[in-house]
Picture 1 (spheres, helix red, strand yellow):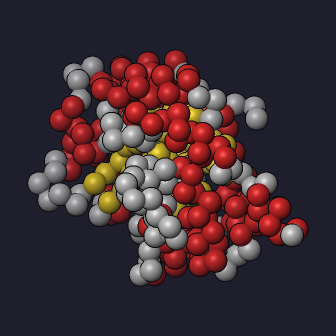
Picture 2 (tube, rainbow, N blue to C red; picture 1 turned 180 degrees about the horizontal axis):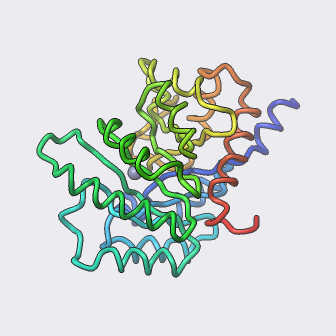
Length: 271
Ligand SMILES: [Zn+2]
């Protein structure tokens, strides 16, 4: 059938995953193969601390479909070396890569918020200086994030907020700062009202799709028993997201793909 065959030709970019993660490290070649067979032809894998920069770099070297981002996740600030800014700057400058995962996470009330803001601001200025996309994590820290954005102004090179968990109004506000909004398997949860509102509110040319592999296992038919997420699940996430957004699947997926090519142009190169 025509609709079926056009869906088979759809391509996807996983805008945020972690292929270096020790839980899946042994199986990356299988994971990449299964992803490509499902139409997920590009995966943006994010390092989370200096310790996994090398692993992320070698995955990107090894697999044509894998593209790197380098950053220090707000959960791992204790891992920072004294020269982290230099290490990060050198790593990003040396390769076609994005910045991240970085951001603010205030879920843990004991987290050092000022330190998180300082480290995140360092990532933002690196992305600005090198004109690279930035892959941002924000949890329960929207006010601090907006304050920071007001200070820096709209990003010169667009970035993304991964696995968006904010309101529809917030999604629209973030677009004005040159941010894309990335939706993960959280949009597939039966009770995901807020995320679905945000998905409906976001501009057509501003949304992305991601798995956050190996986390955020989506609510999809026939889930894998091991419970570790993989980029191959992105088409199933997209299908549910499209139906919740009230958009035909092929249109929804093609637009997400076009958006991803745009934001990741400095990483993907001329493709
Ligand atoms: Zn992540």
